[in-house]
Length: 102
Image 1 (tube, rainbow, N blue to C red):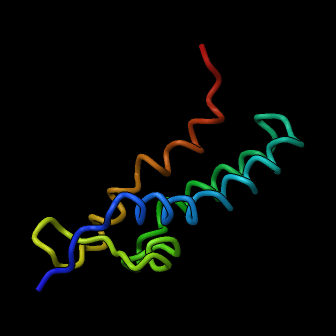
Image 2: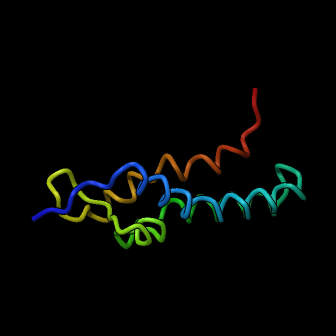
């Protein structure tokens, strides 16, 4: 039997638990350096890596805390490739933060 889909509050709380610490650290580091400084670049690369790999075990810390996991539409646990693919857009955001506006 497949578990029920996560409700909205579980998704919101899990997302906050996952992203808030990373956002605080990234903002703290980038507040003290210029946008193209090595420290800012490293902070963006670390943030992108964490966001890309957060579901690689099947549940990020936030999902684990609220008791949900990433699954395929049919119910079984999603493959590692699918979990990575779903996080590509999240991982792209910190990397694009260093791209100047034209």
